[in-house]
Amino acid sequence: MRLFYLLRRPIILLCLSAIIFSCNESTIDPDLFGSISGIVKTSEENGSLPMEGVTITTNPGTTSVTTNEEGYFELNEVLVGDYTVSAKKEDYTAVSTSISVREAQEVVMQVIMQVAPLDSKIPDDITYVSPLDIQNDQTKLPNKVNLVWKNGETENGDTLRFDVIIFEGASDVNGTKVASNILDTTFTVQNLKFEQTYEWQIVARNKQLDEVEGEKWRFTIEDYPENGYLFVKDTLGSRDIFSWDLADNHLVRLTKDGGSEVSPRISPNEELIAYASNKSGEYHIYTMDTKGKNVVKVTDKPVASYHNNGTGFVWSPEGDQILYGFYGDLYTINYNGTGENKIDDAPVNRHFTDCDWTDQFDNDPKEKIAVLTQGEKPYDNEIYLMDPDGSNRFLLVDNLEGTISNPYFSPDGTKVIFSLDSLFESDKGRQLNARIYSVNIDGTNFVDLSGDDKPAGTNDLQARFTETGGKIVFMNVLNDNEGVKSIWIMDPDGSNREQIITNGEMPDLYNP
Image 1 (cartoon, rainbow, N blue to C red):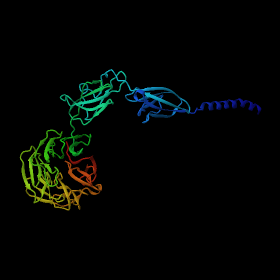
Image 2: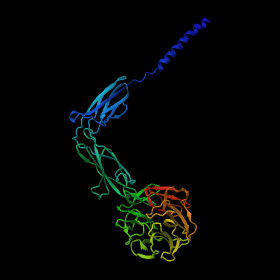
Image 3: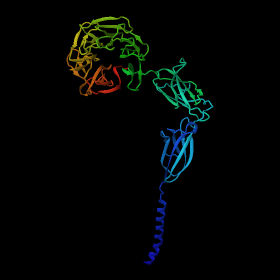
Image 4: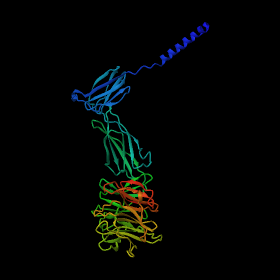
């Protein structure tokens, strides 16, 4: 037994040594911290004033801070060790100071910063990065382009400022300064014109206002998008016409006349847009191409009637004429402004305020016109059907209680849709609960298409079928006359409501 103990004793001693050694190996010394604080001031010749907004950093790195309005900064829980503290601010010479942080001690600093001297050297030439000049890269760019260049050098490391100038083609001699005195070496230009070649130039200057002009580089914007949505958008108090495509999110402003441009209507051949503008003081009908160019004034008589602000006209099915109301008279006029022809008189004490024209009536290839007539009160409305020459007038919707607006044929000509704010009548035209209805062309079967999905306290207005009839597009707005107007689509039975455009009204859709 003693022999066994004697044999085990060395083994036990070795194990205890290993355990002790292992414990010593795993011991970790605790972190030791101190702190740094200080005041940053200008030099005596600059008044010894406290400096706000000075960036304080350390090497090795800790937390970066900036000085407050009294020039004070503080760095807490800084590991014990040797550091270089740097103070930097634009237009001042950077200051670096070596310090040692000790356990549980605060290093208190006073930093004096001098105004940076002016450079006597003109900045180096600017190096452009992107987009590449058109002679090296002919890729067409979207109408939002990010310009990137490299900073030129100065002898004191002066902070350069840059101007960005955009030239709309070679004939634009002066260009447009789209950015001035910026510090960044990138700038994004937006809302550029499609199919336009631009030049861009950077001008750099130092504190001494020595300038260097970069060369001009060119780039071209992509082809004009085929946008299938037309609508009106309020831009800084002026209503303008925009086009938009659902797939690529191209938004294009088509009118910029400074007046109010409303009611865009695409022609049957999808080459022209008819719209109304009050730039002459009264709403007249104009046409333009789908790029917003080649504007032609069509009407000599304004689009005018009771409570009418430029709405109430439509293309003929062939696209050679436009139908519109002038008070109690209903006219057709050729799309180029010739051949004005009066086709009908409104009932006594009523005006023509809106209309539609179809070449499919009750599933037959027959033309028919729907017109909305209105009395002196905005809620005094009737919808009639008639032939294109004004004959065979038929009262489709009588003067119901409430306000009726925007009659529109279904593509097969079997129904007419319209908005009705029933059980509410306001002399000022306010509507509380306008809903979209359909009615058969014989005046039967009124159907509420807005249904239960229409948000409470809103109006559904300006409803139109898409070209194929697969959807109805319309405008929805709060009934307080202060909400943002938005454009929605839904199935012909009123299901599957979906908002597609915010801040938009008077929609028209086609398939380019």
